[in-house]
Length: 435
Image (cartoon, rainbow, N blue to C red; front, side):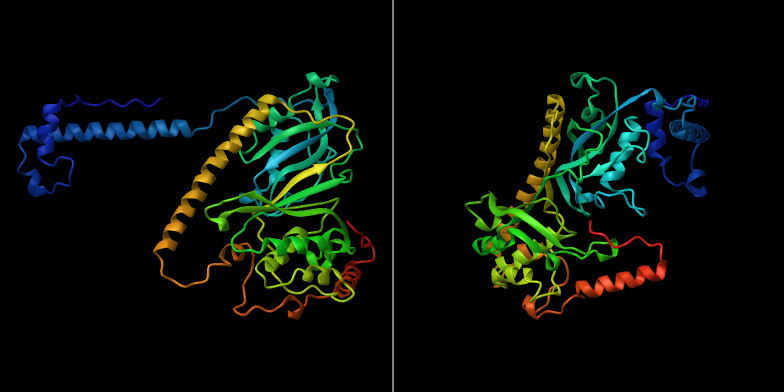
């Protein structure tokens, strides 16, 4: 600890006297020459005291910044531990993250923070030995209420009621926007990805001036098994060459109705299936928004699903990532999901906090919007504003129908390009497989 000697401290009368002579300001030689000997002595004392105070502040700051030296911790002995294969249900708000999966060029991913928490709490030894699978790989900005992962976690007892409270422990070290909701014991070969029987997504959007009825008509063509190559981003480079998927249910439902200002009502697209392609739902929503804007007929969905007639995807913008949520993943389980009441209470409080401030911001902006529209005499057409903001990319000044637009490269050409590239890399390359 640093201690400096300070000359006698001036009383209030002395400080006031010196203060009247601008002791704290910049003084040149002319001004100093007007000071009496007593005033000059007092000034020097005051400056010395001020200097001591600054040194003490700097010393305390340095002490706080110095890392305390702790004895090296003994590594956790996992050889003495038992493990249990479990499912974890994970909730996250993905708006400020770079996606779910770990990336080489960014640590700001959901998966990075999950494994950071798992390692910090010593629930796993490392990722490689944890028998890890994830149900879905959500993109940048996408959220989840029902993401599920499977892995081996450290266990302290065969009795489920006395097992480690995995959710409570993880939530203590996870970021506020990532939470563990529940866990469930499963067999050792159970996979969160391959044993999933149903995935449900929700896409929230404002009504604006969209024709909801026409959008609903368009969704009806999606139900069933189809080739969705025109409703996704083809990932041939990673071996995806088959684009047949089955959608079991799709609907557009009102979520929050605003009777006074109907265009500010919120709707939600609910879509279910066993598996989905890369950007499939955002591409579907992009086309549905064009239908809702009455730029396309609902039958365009049926036309794009006819890959014999339209084998190449037209160039169009997919919908924004922010409103998309992986809402539920279903499994055939032998045990029930295990919830902790205290954990659920904390989760509700945390989400209430997020909702409070987001709702305040939304209503504040809505209030200003309505006020400005009352004052404005502008004849600008605002009918497409809200839905246009959900469509990524550059918008043309003059709308071109989808079937007349420039087409992407065909799937067959992409496959040939991929095979040729793989041959150039060597004959030991793995074959093209569907994922």
